[in-house]
Length: 296
Image (tube, rainbow, N blue to C red):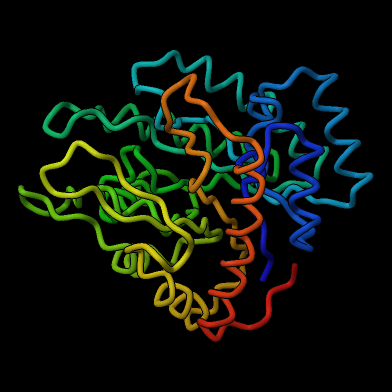
């Protein structure tokens, strides 16, 4: 098994991201943003410099954490924005030897409103097909998007979008209601979500948190791996029992939350130290779950 992570949570500069990866003794990273820009939005010059830095460090990018169809984009957004992201991402993935790109199914509309499912399916079919034509795999993450409403919604995407595979995020179910169940919809159960979709999972994001308190306006609270409510130990054991052979990518959100309010102050040193601490804590959790020693 390969251990990796969204290193932009350790720091904005690629040099810092590489340093955090090397401090953990890992050989892979999951690329989302460099200097505040998603990897598919960097200028050609900046991307080429980043690719050379990664080559020199001997670090491989195992996935692109793209903004394609993300929770930040409504389904009414201009599809040309998405097509531009695809056109820029493909040659960059090929340059780096990256096979997986994380996509989503566009932002959730308030429950009860028209979710425009047909348009979501249409867009995702084209997104997945364009990457497949280039020999690349688009993987859908169960985040705050249509597919994240429930495991049933995710499975509907699999039915409607040929060639789509999944990245399963262990923490995201904890703070989302299970919209396949009648109101008042309960919080999703992460292990149950995994068990429902596991046949289609080719990549895993590691996150853990506590769901929002009932009656409170406070958001979910992120924790070290195994300290929240995602049932991480059980999920790791289930993955191993099911023969999962893909990578595990940490996405801590403990010090840096990418859903945070714009302009919110960030302690860069805390981010770096927190990321490294999280990586080491996950290695320990992985071992305690009696998983085979990972390939780092």
